[in-house]
Length: 454
Ligand code: UDP
Image (cartoon, rainbow, N blue to C red; front, side, top):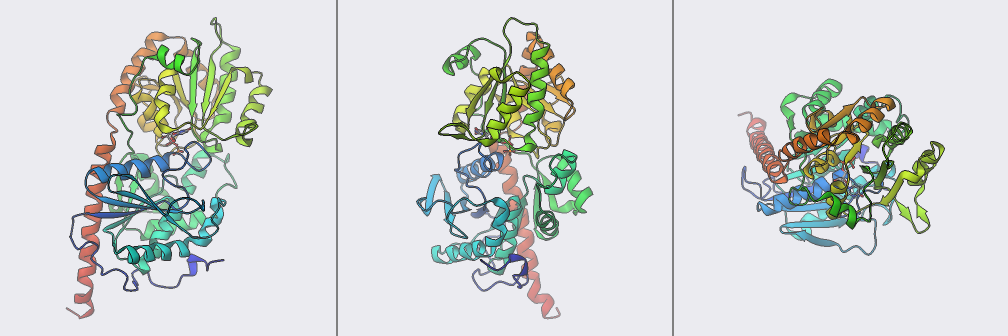
């Protein structure tokens, strides 16, 4: 097993001569970015356990940066022997498989042991390929730790995006996720926050919480939301979308996402059961579930548990399990739905809510994390206190039973979604890269003068 990266032993700016300290040599001009996504590939199947918003974020941000003329190398851990070493999914973007640890899917919790190997393999790749980077952009704490280890080889500044922070997730879920997050993760996130050059928060609340919980310097954080692809998510005819999915006219609720306790699907099944118990319409509402894992024999274990719970509540016949669906087909599901439900215990941002809004489908969401910013009560959707089953059932019943309300919320949703284009997000991220790179270069240039007692 590789040595623990925690005891790697070299100072954080202690380079080994792999990088001349000048990146591409052009101050303020960002030409090449190393994007790190250790535990999950940007081209993985979405909706499964560890593949969701972060994968979309890395892929779409890289694509936009590539369009804007920046070369992006995305480094991810090899878990499949047959995956090509390098693929180029978009203009100026490469996905590079790094071998570190077993070439197999391993629990995320064990990956920390392989980060030292991952970092040195990345550095070797840079040497062999003859490239250096102006910025390292790390996603999730495991990649952030790798970026810190890379400081032994490279001098590029590190921009960190956590996607979720363990301490905030635990706090927000009020005991429901106890035991899920290791103290190693919590401690590493604390150290990362102190040591990276800049941090991207997805909204003002996340920013405020980082300052409050971690004592983060405000100058290090930039609040930049996530984006969505407005060419992919746009309104479509509801009846046609339903026909394509083989659905009839019954009122339709939609859930899209990973089946993880943080997503609150248990809360949704309870709310759906109460809604059905009080429903007076001709056709009972149905609930479409997109995401989770299917097996040859049917539902994977997480989805099977969801069905069991629905059976206990007597509503399993109203559930339609679609399994994970490719991102490019999701607009049809959003268009087919009357409402998208996002019952999460915690969301750093919550892409699903905005994707649904971009398709003109209003959202009923819990007032959790980023959702409290994107979903505006009575404007583009309805908000309920997280875990409040009667409130959720009431909001669903109210919106499903009132066509005018849904039309108004749908119109508001379209307006909201336009604020979140990837092109704008990429432009803001690029400005942060420039600023961080310039600050890092200035600090490095100043070092010899100080050493000489100047
Ligand atoms: N997604 C998908 N197919 C699925 C399930 C999810 O493409 O079967 C996508 C979804 O469209 C969204 C992302 O996965 O872009 C989930 O992001 P979100 O921020 O809502 O949740 P996270 O996974 O980050 O917790």
